[in-house]
Image (tube, rainbow, N blue to C red; front, side, top):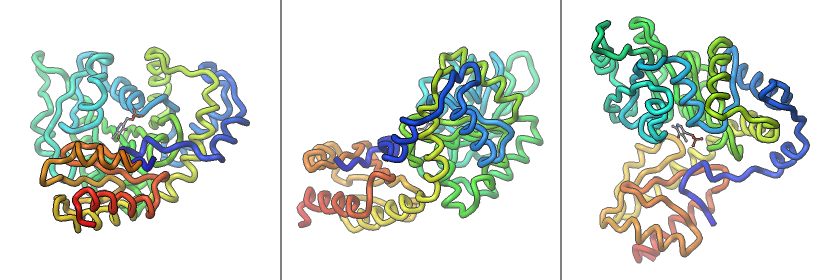
Length: 337
Ligand SMILES: *Cc1c(COP(=O)(O)O)cnc(C)c1O
């Protein structure tokens, strides 16, 4: 099967499986797992923070960040299409008692800072105190500009807000922004990063911040059932993902660009190739035959997500030949071959 549904589908490499099999482990709830400790120390340095915490998922890392920054009855500002508003089961509200204040994202994925300002609640007994602005980069495959993120930092300083980045794919953003990842992360009080997407680890994410913040969120992680024991088995693969994964993300971006150009030559599809910035490609079926197309491709051993638009994701388990196979199969579906 060639799988374009998501970059979460990547399988651990032989090197990762070897590292997992031979990982030095201990009980991480006691802080005794050397492989987890070493991953956390390495990640903190790599992303420019005092401390890091290994978490089960990106969802858990975002929830810990929101709960770590906001108290019960507080509020966080986020995009209407933010993962930590839309796709995390309402966890911040349900488990953290933190109210989201979503703001419509601009077409480039940013949150207009004037709109954010208007959403900050005045000091008044009627209102939930606004504590945090949460941004996402990349968002829907789009990259926030470095200049915008600098402005967002100043905005938060000016208004006494904390600033979190859902950086599930922050390394993809760094590649596209042509900077070291710290050129992005330096603007934030906390950052979450997925090891299990394009970086290739089977499981795991990281939360980064000050030592005090990470101590607080380590307690919250335990409370939420995320205190894992010999987690070094997972951290061993995560370490390889963090060290090596970022070096090859440019290939995923090149394959996504190549795929977009190929899709643009298929008249039955609607796509603006310039909108593909990283590893996620969106295209619309003009005929609305997305489900038929998905089923046809599945019969050929190719998996895609049949939304409107279609969403196609490149990652380390698909190469240029696989992209060619996908394009050829789509042309056959539309009887162009
Ligand atoms: C995937 C993703 C997450 C959550 O990660 P999981 O490990 O699937 O919980 C959070 N934010 C963004 C932007 C994501 O793409």
